[in-house]
Length: 477
Image 1 (tube, rainbow, N blue to C red):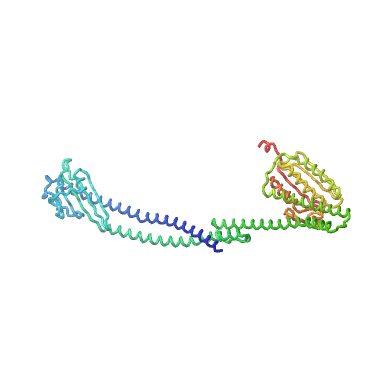
Image 2: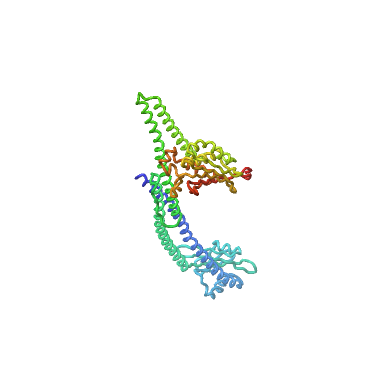
């Protein structure tokens, strides 16, 4: 029991681990996407906003400086001073060599400012750069000052924006809180789902182990209509079939043992009688030996029928050939004529035309022999047995009817079971084993046919067998 629990825990943990890893990978990917994509889009949006604002103001300043005759610190200051509505933190103006002519902070006036943006502007290009550091945007934009299509200087604007940086920081903080809440919710849902799922799987595993140990009556009750519930239903149907098969196997072994025990006991009793009686006369000994021979014949008959059933159960190779059913019916009638005369039963045949079945010749002979032999043995003195064949479309019908003791209606569904006999005393007296009809049914089904039984019009029973007919299409195929 401990090993079973250990195996169940290993399987459960394995499933839980795989589910956890799968969920963790999916959730991690979603959280990474949630915490990066919106932030990157927001940053890019703010970068473009800063670029547009700074470049518009740089164009305004360059247009103002273009009207000056010469770029000097005085002319630049005179041109920029009236622009009081500039929304920038710092303004630098350089000449064409990069020398700073004007600096709103005054730190670089008279010095060279050869930053990347200024160099790009002096080459005639607009330039922009921005960084987001510690919830603050640091942006720079530069534009060339053009006079008669010549670059005479550059304007560089600096802007620091902590307001939008704080907004982006708050967005990042809110996304982290949302990610945490989502993560906790998913973990809770996963724990509940994992417990339910692994519990249902463990129930199936426990049921399989119980059936493996031989408890075929075990059934699984699982609510719902999902795949696991359907699997549980299939499991219950399978165990039901296993239970039926096991019951039939046990009954078969019990019945076979009983059938073999009776003639063996007779042989043992008769041999002991011969051996223990030293003065037994020859006539009595011959009688005992004859009885032993009859018991041996019964054992041989039982063994042959058991072997036939075993071959049918194992799926023996099926021989399908054109079989003249009428010929086999006549052949069986000739073979069983002495038995019919001994039982004072008359055999009558009504054979149709074109009755060629797609079957095995020995199988057809066996079907006729078993059905006709039963019809003779369970008949009454002066009774009759009717054997009829006819062609019905793509099938050949075989009928064996008798005027004997018949079969009770409530017993007709059971007579094809192995070792089942309606009248056990009469069956043993007639030498029956209860296997003949089972062999006939299995043989007929093996060839794709059907067998049925019905009460006779006046007395007895009528057995009807249908087999596939041999046609030219089948032969060509």
